[in-house]
Amino acid sequence: MKIKDIQEEIVDEFSMFDDWMQRYEYIIELGKNLPLIKEEFKTENNLIKGCQSKVWLQGEQNDDTVIFTADSDAILTKGIIAILIRTFSNQSAKDILDADMDFIDKIGLKEHLSPTRANGLVSMIKNIKMYALAFNSQN
Image (tube, rainbow, N blue to C red):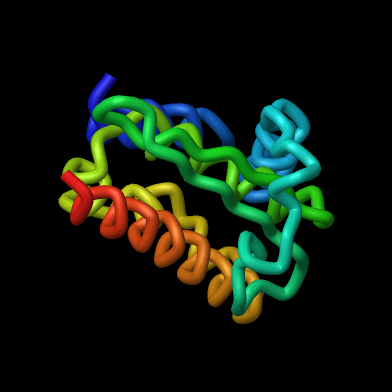
């Protein structure tokens, strides 16, 4: 599935909810279903700087795709990174770099987060793009 299709699917899912409390609950559910990162990857190097809570992100290249795993010590943040991993994992580095991020605004995520969580979201996206940039330059 292409990144744009996954983003549209996420926008559709969020549009089913009437209010932001339901959306927060959905984000938390997504976080609970996030496959856990291996303990060996919970290192200082994989810690995303700029997040209020601890978020670890690990990326590795598998043939032509980038596979991401992540974890967080905060349940809402874990849900946010789960949305990003669903969108960008198993995609090519070039597609990740070329991806538009407007789906974040379409689901209203940034405007409903505290300023520190919104900064954390930007940092998560930046780290995902940095992995893609590193892997893309190797090809």
